[in-house]
Length: 639
Image (cartoon, rainbow, N blue to C red; front, top):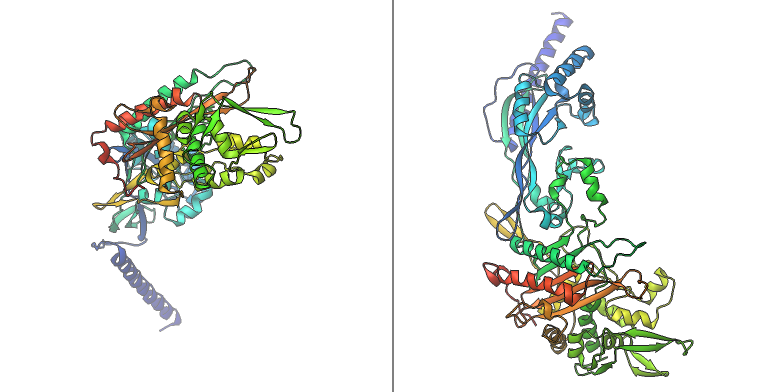
């Protein structure tokens, strides 16, 4: 036997052993993670290939099962670079043939076939065109019959049913950005896949995404599938159930639109000054669980604009809109809250021993303060009217500024201390205890913290020392202090439930495989205070909601409500010294057994005149819900 024949026989034996091991390896792989199937006969050059199968994204519903975000059938045109001829001339002919049958230009086909991803995985489809109408998809499939390199694939796209009122909450999905492609591919995403970008779609991406499946197929040397060896089915994403009641949400949106328009009537249009831009926010929150029943920010936008079919000019218009519709004013934007901050000042003064429920202060409509370096200079701090002598309940009911000037900063006359106030550092301590100056923990992205100022902050940020006038304006919720409407809703809920600062939740829970998993109640901190002091503040807010209080405009018939109005100056003064004002309203009720807190904010307006009626409409809509109070959790030991 010659050396050559021995070598040939040895190579044949090794080749046979390799084929046997390859078959065993494929069988082992299939047995580990695929359903067993009959392996088809496969000839020379046929190889196994794993093909990912995308999972259906979970739907989003309101608390009553109304679907708000769903998947709808869609079609896309893709090219498989590995199925194009590799030689230059046949490749060129194939591209021209594909152009004629698909309508996609050769240049675009070339770019798609030569991407870096196509070089790494030439058999992974590269998207040429998305969101193809069904009629055109059928026509394209007929035109491309017999062609393998370009095909029409059935897929799905996201559809938002209630976009205007809920766009900020739902968010939207979008393509994976280039800077995240590598990391997300490691996590199992396709490079051409989609991911939650904002809102619930982003925060609960892992729940909504589901688990991709796999198909083990046999492919010929041209990359075409010639057999299926097995598959593992994808697992659809969970259904995310919002705490939002869509009926209440729509009612709140309608009431807020009306309030914004009414409040705008007091805004001034003067040459040389920016035109007033309308805006506002409204929140309804369960005071015992933290569930958010309605969350409205206006102006809003259509979440469906970001599905990939919208013209660039339209998207650019949304981005350039001076009303900033993409910003959720409930938790992304801060403003001075005005007098709805006074209940916290009252609680702090009671706890610090600065005042009691019976402490009386007289307001003649203003106080004067001497310059500490030059007594001849006097500053005037106005009240909104002369209220006379008041105890704390009456001061809250009538929202006296003078009363809260003194609680916050005290008062000296002719060098003698007439009333000892808390001072800025104590006030700031209580603002932080009330949950301000930090995120509430709402389950939406991009929350703003707001600002709790103090003397060190001012010296560093402004370059000036803290003065008594700063403390006075701080004590009535103005000056440097800012908060979000959601922070005010959390604070109102804490007053109602006895001190629990709850993380607001727009997602109530998750449904999957026949089971419901609640999102849970989270207490982020405690607002300290004795039962008696909480009761004093609540009684003051109850008096504010009476007919001779400032908040009576927000009270539905037949309800006892604890409420507070706020009107906060902002911007530059007009020639007559007056300012534009924000309008606020904060409430919880029913008073004896609190269920919900409501906060309304209007960019322009007066709290009692414009924000109060908005809250009243929202509360009436809440009372009219078909299932009534059972839609929200029952009180859990409110103190």
